[in-house]
Image (cartoon, helix red, strand yellow):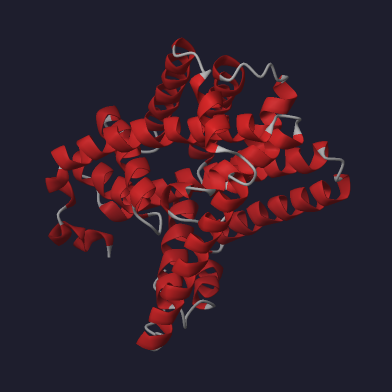
Length: 329
């Protein structure tokens, strides 16, 4: 599917980028202000200082297991399977790049890394990465449904479920009628970058909608997100010792995951802290304790993977030389 060769004036594109950048960093700034409201640094430091060190290694172990599961998921999304070493490294590199660069550049880096490591065209690996991210969005959509239903918003949850089922029906229709998928991408014609992104993403999703691939993604994505939920449980009950029930842990996990969908700076700095702290406060946790565990949880997700992915990236930076990106275009 090739988008039409139309474009907005350069001034409009520049203003759009500036506006969107201001929105994202503005959201992060406001969230930081909200998260730290009424919390003294002394109380925050005292709360963090009470956390025992041994359980932190348990959280880190579960986090690494989640990244391994992400590598395995990517590895078996091609036939023959891709090298696990390459997909595991690509998962770490992608997360690290997303933590420091805007516009989800880590997804492109992940696709190029996998393609170069396995001798596969980057156009194909982009499709694999788009499909992987699409299933992660579906998990977040399921969390949204669960969240709304348990909040007593049954009508809203039912409407949400209908919209999700309708979306899948549209995708299966596009799969059977590729011409209609191409017509759909033309609706974004005046916005070349957006049209190209929609075309690539839709192509990647549709090409990977075989029964075998869908079954594998369903099972493997469930495993990945179960590890992330377990990580949250270890943080809240193992490190912070809050003694929350599983329903409450899943509630905090769901709200935190959905909060990551908000536009924000790379790494969701501020947004994650504000959303998770707000969820914990709703569960009766004191503001200083809520912010402390939110900061700890975010830093444990942010620092190790950024450092590990950064080391891997710079060790193999030759695979991502700009002149080799021509097969992504």
